[in-house]
Amino acid sequence: MPELQYKEALKLGQKEYRACVSRGDDPYLPVLDEILAAVPTAGETDLGIRQIPAEFIVGTRSAGRANMFAANFMPLAEEGTEFAAKWERLCRAHLDEGIRESIRVCEYLNRYYVVEGHKRVSVLRFFDAVSVSAHVIRILPLRDGTPESTLYYELTELYRLSGLSFVEFTRLGSCDRLRRILGLDSGAPWSEELRRSFASAYFTFRRAYQSCGGDRLSSTAGDAMLTYLEVYGLDTLRRQSPAEIRRAIAGLWEEIALQQESAPIDLKLTPEEKKPGLLTKVLTAAEGRVLYAAFVHDADPALSGWTSGHEYGREYVQRHMDAQVRTSAYYYALDRDPGAVIRQAMEEGNTVVFTTSPRLLPAALKAAVAHPEVTVFNCSLNQSHRYIRTYYPRMYEAKFIIGAIAGAMAGSDEVGYLCDYPIFGQIAGINAFALGVQMVNPRARVRLEWSSVGGIDSALRRLTDRGIRLISSQDLVRRGDEWRGLGLSLITQGNRVNLATPLWQWGSYYAGILQLIRSRSEKAGYEESHKALNYYWGLAEGVVDVSCSDTLPPSVRKMADMLRRSISQGICNPFQGPLYTQSGRILENDAILTPGQIIRMDYLMENVAGEIPRYDELNDVGKATVDQVGVESATKGPHG
Image 1 (tube, rainbow, N blue to C red):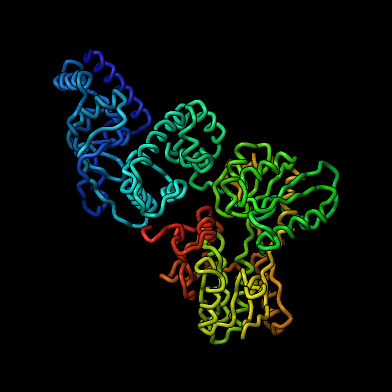
Image 2: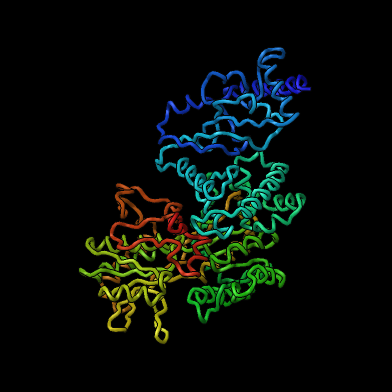
């Protein structure tokens, strides 16, 4: 009976009214006119008739109807009134044949405010309607660069391409993460098959998420589903039953809950037991259990300088911690199923697993969720994952010193910088190098090229064809007819003279981490923080250094030693203002960028000639790496 249903709806409205008053909130519908009176907008656009999520209808356009409904759109007028009678007639129509006439709404910041059809919304909300047919006028906020505005326009682009208006994220970059998970090109519209498949999976997931207590979190079902998809993928979600999804959500709960944190990453800049000689003490055998640690590589050390460096680190640990640690290595993980390789390492008794490439991050995360008894690491930066730890050296400190050496040796010439991938940490290295050059040679320019755009030989040729002889590179040693290696080099007529080399002290890094695990159990450290643990050690911790060639003038070597000591002691910081980017001033006076700001850099200093490449310009390995740990400006294609 509609009369009984109105009575129940009235009770819900009165209950919401009392709850709002007790919290000090406005108990009536929010009024869009009042919201817009205080903010400038960028105009309106007519979106026509579309299905909109009922849960996103939150208020009214004008104040005239606001006090007829509680904040949950349930009625407040007493039984027997004209308002109640109209509500009951709509209720009867809905039960008999459904409400078919579209309402009229204004959309602002992904929320809908009713212009016409308030009682229809009330009835449909009472019956838990998922969506409502509406004629939508979108009121556009200014593109002012604020997180709120930026996120809104990311969502509108997702809605334009997918046609789905019910998925909502609370973190910047989430729409692009979803695109990469689904394997879509930037700017590509969704197929009808994908749209239907995703919508069905979303609503199944949302019900499971809410039944697990998702409504108690500030993160949305979209945030939670994105976390799920990064571990398991859409195909797995589509195959799972609701019970299986609930179990998977329970296993991922800490990862999901982490997404509601405004700062989900806990950066560890020093060993947690800050004592003199910590890394030296690693060399002393200690009583206690033996740790079994696996190193999973994406390549062979004979062919990859990156993998070779990590293997030297593993061998260092094995030599100096032989009584405490047993290590094993697994190669070519990406040529096989990387998840199977990691599982094999676990099954063979390893309780610590280091995955040494950002491209192994998805497999490492999935394995860590499935095996919480194993401590899993991935060599990458800025990853907000609760179940794995990440680690990377503050290499920008060494790059700053090498930049100062380059500036001292350059005279009036340009200096070259050859980088591989536009990922977290690498942009900081470019900028620190440029600031080092600028410090000793204000007029010198740094010419930037990328080996992941056209290959290393092409990138190197683009520099040498400009007459640039002094080049800093992560990949510059000749093997046969090809250059490979590390360091600042003077290249003349095909010959190379190394002047300085940044040292990645992986042995010290791995020894330090493993000593922490042995001395007080990394599991204890895991419990101490509810955030994602990112280890980010540098010169002071002995995991980064600079080797200077005897061919350098003594005065330049002396300068490099002074900078090394100053950075280690915290006297000098490469990113202390004033700093200027290619687009203008960003930091003034004595302000210093935070470690988080340094990691997330996606801009270049003013004395850098070049740019961060777009996603579509990268080679396949570059795209795969950027997919996991790329800076935002590099994850977008030509339409991004």
